[in-house]
Image 1 (cartoon, rainbow, N blue to C red):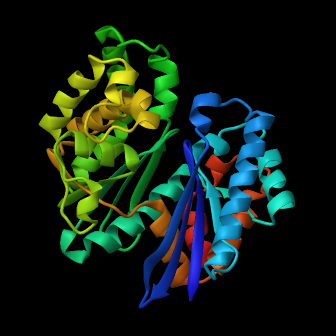
Image 2 (cartoon, rainbow, N blue to C red; image 1 turned 45 degrees about the vertical axis):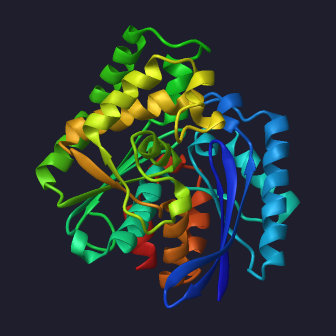
Length: 336
């Protein structure tokens, strides 16, 4: 069986085509289309018509590419940048009408649940009670669990793109007071969630997302050309040094640092502050950088539970209630 997933994120539309052999999604083709929605859309504002047009074109090309590789119609979802837009339903309808792809938005808590599933599969049962953090463009997802799916999830408005708009809008290196102000906000938002993680006492901790991967490379992790099976870790002390290093430079010069790509250079500082503060508050000194994240979680759930669970996600997505009201427990109960 060959399946595919399309992920509409804050910066790119990504396609993964995979063979489901033995219950494991083995990628056969990947592609991406750069949108940089986070640069054009402020959190909580409408997605402009020209950006909707570019999004539709990217999803249409992803669908055609998926078909050329022999996969059925892709499972397609959008994360925080579309989820928080007031014209969210208009965007989803435009994609569906013009491409035939049923794009839906996932509540942040469901993103955390699916990303945890992927991390659990990658790390294995030997990792024991597992904590997870994922920094996206619009939100930070946190999860903890002892089994296949998490016991506890949270989604917080602490995405690297969102916070960059709020705290670091200029092209210059920010004054340190702005960095401290961001750190205070992150501490306040994470207070209860971090207390829960400390109380649970995880045996292992993983981080996912391009933000953490690039920060890991900046802090000395091996580059991607060494493959996914090389263990990569991120130390809290090294990340603290990275915050200071990034804060001293304007975005254009951050892109010259190891691992920091030009499209993500502007939001790299906010991502580093969130990551370091979260690790400190949760008491995590070292985390493992996991190459599997939400796309692999969606593929795994599709393989293990069939298409019915995604149909339920789409049904809930059409509800009048805002997407944040849809909890992972409702989806889990409907598909268990």
